[in-house]
Length: 305
Image (cartoon, rainbow, N blue to C red; front, side, top):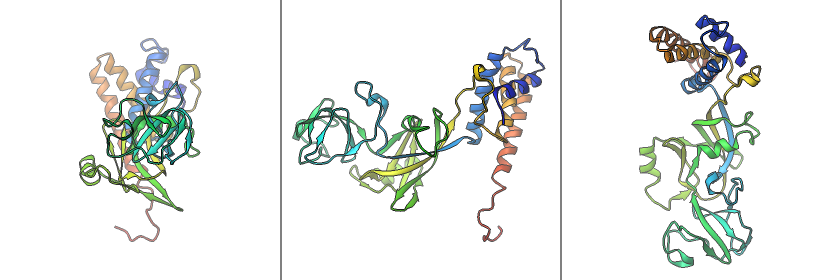
């Protein structure tokens, strides 16, 4: 297991600077943290399973009065609701801005002029029964930021605060089973599952869009529990707690020193030496990726080849 002190010693040896004559500890720490992030991006070494539900937490920017994001609850007819509550209805999420009792009819889809729906999505508060609602967003997508907010709150998530980098798999709880959702490239997903605007049901597939959105299709027709398998970027190591064990473990952490040394030489414009360290990093990360998965046997009963 490695700590920041371990990394500092390794990098200082590579740079022949044991006494910090040329590189300060803070400089090397910055390079080490950048190298740790690069190692995870190249290898997917740091993963966490986040348990959440659809629709997921709404974005923090949609909160009222600094209230933390929370799970939406299913809209129910003729039910008292309190201000700040998030409601899920007809594939959309609303927030209650005025406490009251919901109408007998759910917020409509598609838009019409009933209940002050002159435009959709509504830009101002509208009333459903006696409660006032504001539109927050749709239920087909989950932001990476929402998953990041959940890190540490899930019993399957051992760390806290790590930033979600990518999504590998999603399992949907269905009865007493976990159903893996298919992954589709965005172009295929958009053509197959987003053609009809009101296509709702149990999600069958997911796709990632841009730099931080997961889309589910069909759009969830109710609340489903899901497991999201995430690749996450590590939090920075700090000189103030340099003895803390890194979350990146063997064999991946053996690559960090070489990329940190590469950065040190690159930023001082010693490009020849930098390239040597970069080649060492590439060699080590390739060796790790070539061996880490080949040790597993898919099934002891499967035939070879």
